[in-house]
Image (cartoon, rainbow, N blue to C red; front, side, top):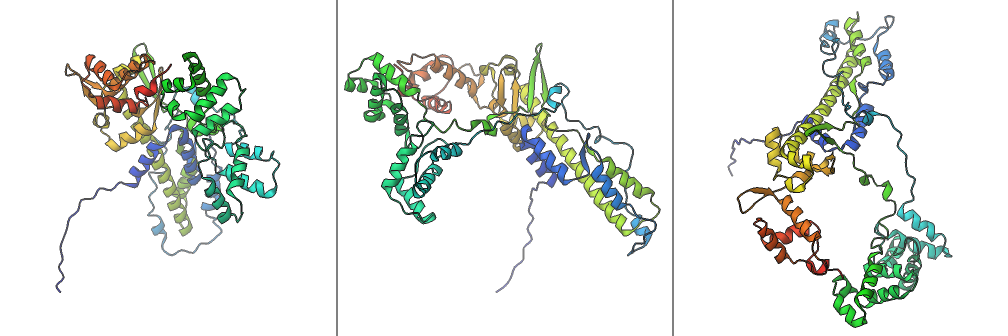
Length: 493
């Protein structure tokens, strides 16, 4: 069997460590940038904030300096150690590193040190466990009930089957119980607050809440509707409900009001104040200054960074030292590595901010009409490629910025990807943003008579009359993207 050899040439594209680090930094929101910088400060003593002292560096300096009375073993001549070039590290000029500043002078309040109050809240599970302790249960029942409470999801629902809970207790905790015992304990837990907890489905959740109300006529009728006509109610087949219960429009309105006031997610309100995603820290600020748009970068979480003066002094001490020994050389190499790493990190922070400003500046220029008026119908069609071409950045870089950053305007705070949309051609041949079409579609639906909601066919005709060439299936797609239900489900009495 003959073995053959062949020569192949491949072209591979690899990202440098610096590029990878920059991509990671770009994805970090302003709210989390301080944490990332703090990690770097802890890992690299050559990097410091301007208000920090050089204590750590001085300790290393003491270790680095040689004692004239102590002899060190050398494995080479003194000339070997004189080869370490430190000229670029001991110059008096700080270049662009020492004067690097990330604070935004237009927003001095952003740089102020303020103590943030912390809300001490009880988690959803802890609240249920506290109420569990109020029940008169023996040790066995408590463990079963604890398993049930642990199976309740964040919305407050118990979506595991009774048989599955029984099996979990038997196989994982060696606790023998029955489906009947589990079901009885579920009924007890359903009496906990907030009302509706531990329901197996939406129908049961709403009924639990209604049955804890004062049993007047509207409440009793609402209970009957949910028990016997739940499907018809969810599909808004109100005529069938009225015929079956022999009620008029006013009674039906009272029933609807009773039901829509209920909470479909009883667990969703607990502990929300502790969730980080409830707070948005804008990365950019856009201000309309007498018709001129001004863009600033929120750099609240990027402190003033510099190379440690202590580390520079240590290198200067080496430069003037009479003796050059092995330990000094090793210390100098270590110091140079740390200084290089610090310079590199500072440069990455600078590149990050330059990339953010360039990207947002291009978006601001492209969507100037919106930022001046706040009118969504004035948004121009814009895709990632448009901004990539304006800035000279890669499309993937623009995408990272657009997906994770927010801009605060006088009209509200928006995620950058909000400003990106495809184009649609009108009858006159003009290209408009699909977001403009969605805004008009939303306005038309908001203004419709809810007793006779507009069908997708009618909405399509209305948009065509306004000059937008759009098909019915496209209207349906846009409506779904806007989380607007079909006409039948928008009907109100």
